[in-house]
Image (tube, rainbow, N blue to C red; front, side, top):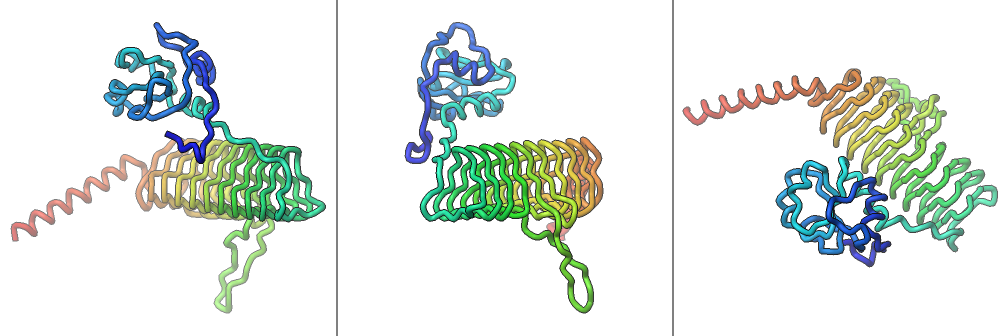
Length: 345
């Protein structure tokens, strides 16, 4: 159960209200005015809690659960324990996310500039925005309404931030334009110099990085990730994209809407990701490539050539997924044969 020292529960909510929030239908034989007070996992939920089932591996836990209500797919309605109220939806996990947000809404910013924050007189701070102790806002910066600038974050000169955006503790922003409803987690670095230099035997020569970072609306950037500014063209992160912790995005990279970049992945400079590309953990993408819409890159893959739209690739160097599985299977068979021969000797 969520620790009340860190999380404040809202509600309670009637079953009818929860159905409206989740976009779900109430199962038969249930009182829509029944009240629920919290969310909980299947194995820990009680009679006033709401849970969910989104994976058939947990059907037995569902059948044994004491949850008062559960968000379920129509396919498993018949397997519900007696007396459990059902909220029926074809997207139980999405519905659960909406219900959990209702029970645990983000707290509103504490409007105002805290003692100990440093805000340049030429900076513009929107109505309802919170600037916490230790934060620094540079000259000419523009921050929208209802934003939260956490402790020791640095918003550089002339940076622009849209409405309802959160900048986490110790994050630093320079040379960037940030959209609305963006969540930048602690320790993120946005707009630092791209890794650009001319190689010369007498000594490497830095190339000035003269572009910006553009982060569109509804993006999340996970803790300690870095997004370099462009060398001339901009680095662009498309709306609704989700970037996990410890991700490196190089200069001039362009990401379309709805991309997902999982932890410890790296994207080299000038590579273009079309919309809804997925990079699993520790994937690496070489520079100047094009990754087509909806492509999926397996964990720890090394991508060295363009990936067509809708393709799934894996391995290093990355190849189509079926080919990668054949390679892994063949190698496994070869090594098993070698081990058998060694035992015989």
